[in-house]
Image 1 (cartoon, rainbow, N blue to C red):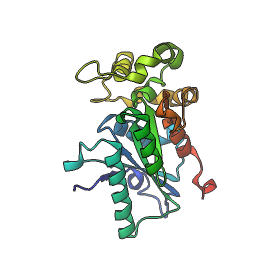
Image 2: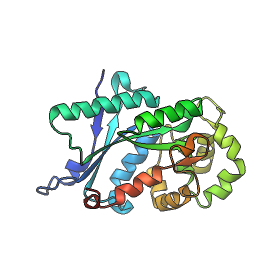
Image 3: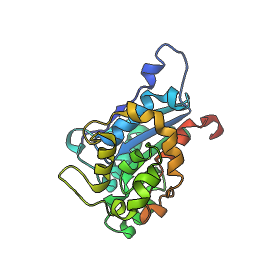
Image 4: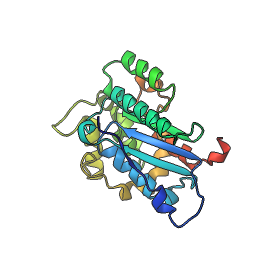
Length: 236
């Protein structure tokens, strides 16, 4: 099986400094091949502007080769477990520093029962970053009064999130129409980065608990970004 490729900016950012080591490292793996990866690369590349703590490293795990199209969360869990074992065997794993994050959509599961079973299993050793029904609901929150203008008046259709074309579900088309972007092909993070705080605040009006998202619209992406803003010295 092809290994996950690490995408990181830490060494590039600090190549002229001496003895700067992260005190918290987040390894992120994503269900989608493009949208979520482009978003969090944008977060990492704009970390100072977004208030990401300088002692936190973000490592994006890119699925390539034969595993490129692995998307179901159950497969992501296997890959993240293998990554952890690889780090342990190489002697580079630090239990206090390394955190593993699985980013996935609630609508990957057909039933509440299957979703909650996965949450119970995967949440024992990993951070679960979930969007219900899909990642585009988090992206929509970057827009002004998003909940009142775009979400609360069509909650049922968003939650069903039926396919409306070969490339879009209902929610992804809603974001695409709103933003002028097709997030599956080209997500322009520069347009969104000015409004990350707005999205974080709006998210608090939706369900943020992963178990609650079994049957409620929600997201906890904002909670993850807030964690990345914390001083890891307070967490050790």
